[in-house]
Length: 165
Image (cartoon, rainbow, N blue to C red):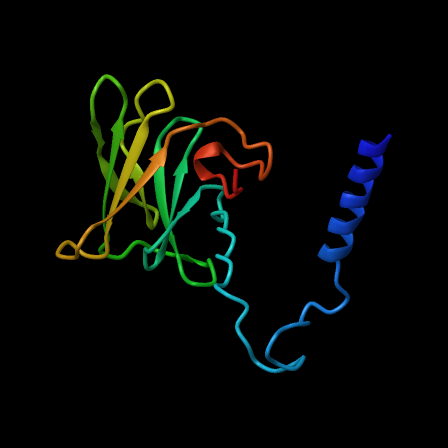
């Protein structure tokens, strides 16, 4: 019985000290004054307009999408995610299944880049997407895990998932 009472008292003490009415109590500023609460949280990643993966650090924004036929499409968008045609970019996609690396042939089609051949059989292997703004530009390499399973959280394909799991 003493252990039960002691545990209850400890639980109440912890709960009461964790709850405060004023989240600014003890701060060295007045409510409403500009101040820093530490590093900002990273923005939640956005889903691609077509349900693919928006690739980071590309300008214009590139969306990586795997179609039902396992062919890769790379489309481009401005900052407001409005479609813009491909204009001089160079795209390379390499699949890395256990059987060995496979470079996909990408061709310009309808303002985007589409692979001539489908991705190799299987899943769970890495994909490397190389984006160059121009033929002479420094390449940006983006690595993705090839997984066509549906995410239970965001409902996108796992390779395009925007959840924090």
